Image (cartoon, rainbow, N blue to C red; front, side, top):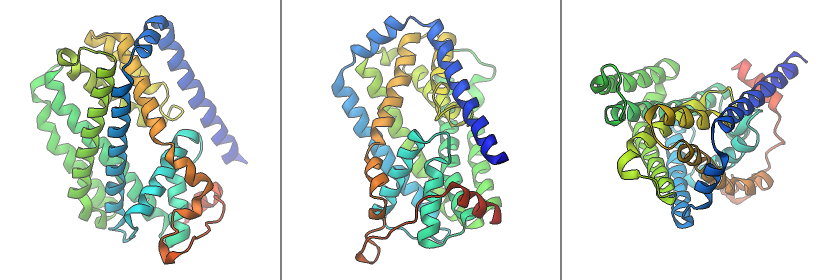
Length: 312
């Protein structure tokens, strides 16, 4: 009973936090200007951005699978992609509950009988690798933004420490995960780089002054990605927009265009998750390639995952 109330309170807090952030931004911005910016976008650039973003999703599936293989958990490429896409869809539409990661853990536990603790560790290591690479990109990019910071030209020397910190986490949590350190780091570099291209295409679609301000927009994009990963909002809603708006004010770039960039990126990520909807209704198709037949997975039970996680 206490857990149920706790979950409800957390969900209410996230809704209020996201709503408050959105309200603050809307109270500061000219909505007409934001609407005009979005209305005038070039749809061809947005379609290209969706294709590019989907490419980053595929790269992320290989990154996660390289961690799974160290557990050892061997999943063929296509079933792994299908399961990953299902998780993406749930992350958007069940952000207040266990989310897509919980579903992935549940199904893999049921199918492969892999300990929940190992699965959660691999998935958390996957998320952390993305955040560590984003931080590396930020440390390298901070020198080029048009804003004075103390020791601005020396931030790059922290890059090796970020990588070392991520390796140390893998070593402390599960030494086997360190076998995937280089492959995971490389996939993260590629995936975040590809997403950067998607953001540039979004800016191009709005006719933004990419040649003059692209460093600032990309810098804010990376910052907003870190902010949206902090579990205080409803699926990151509000956090990303707040960073774009506040950062635009400090960096002297178009505020409406910055918020529009944030909104369009969220929309592209949302649209790109739609293939996972198919597996919501056809979950047994995810592992149908194993043994040449469909495998029925019992109905998901969030409480069961919580119990198994505690026991492991």
